[in-house]
Amino acid sequence: MISTKNTKILALSGGVGGAKLALGLATITTDEQLTVVVNTADDFEHLGLSISPDLDTLLYTLAGESNQSQGWGLQGESWQAMNMLSSFGGETWFQLGDRDLGTHLMRTQALRQGQNLTEVTEILRQGFKVKQRILPMSDDPVRTQVNTIDGQLPFQHYFVRERCEPKVTGFYFEGLSQAKAQAEFVALLQDPELAAVVICPSNPFVSVAPMLNLSGVKALLQKCQAPIVAVSPIVSGMAIKGPAAKMMNELNMPCTAVAVAEYYGDLLDGFVIDDSDVKQADDIAQLGLEVLVTPTVMNNLDDKVALAKQVLTFCETLQGEELLCGQ
Image 1: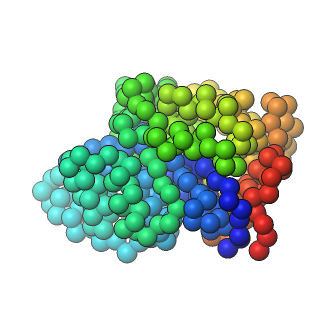
Image 2: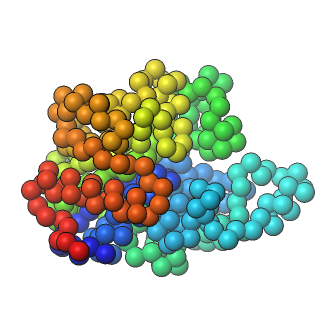
């Protein structure tokens, strides 16, 4: 592990792609240095349970418990509960493994007993022995609704049940205007020790946008003295994971890293693109952004660590302050 100075790093993460980079960052920083704020607009209630897919993906990834072959859920799963539910004709379109059910049962019970989502996430973090701080974007419920040509769908219905097939026309975040950004998230954005804000390669529209559009967050980011850097989720015109590319096409946006950079706009100081998209670097620079061209596809831990090192070194050049102190 790389030793680090006493500076703080904030990562904003959605699900699988964001969790991959978060793991890389966690590997090269101290336990106290990294805080990951996670999208909770994908959360929903299913089978009477409170489910937080992005939070759980991050927890399982940082705990070394994620199912690598499946790409979601826990390793070593069994499916007895789902098989039983199926025999009764119950809803099984959202698959919940037996181990995974334990997470949701714990969360649901704690929430019903009056604890907030931050407190519940802390219980789960400690249970999984994850050392880095993990925060939900808000303790208030926000729910992504996907507008499609077939009508409005809750995000998980669109993403899992309908397999992203309906054509997207836009998005609505139910509860966003009333939701407050999580208190520690707000405090960290104003902390003079904050040295970098990293927007992980997550879906800009349904994973990152809810976090950025919480009341006051964009204003705090614009005042933030730390460099704000985003990693493009689009590589060679494709999304590595999830429906971002399909959404961009259906919203009549070019499926390019440039379009993602334009979407984030002047909120950013720097933008990271894959080396396969090097020809787009000049166009991104013309937006007023510094550009880092580096391999961004993360197939294994070495890839995650390498990208994390590149991103933090990039932040160092933007900030003029050393974050990584050597091996």
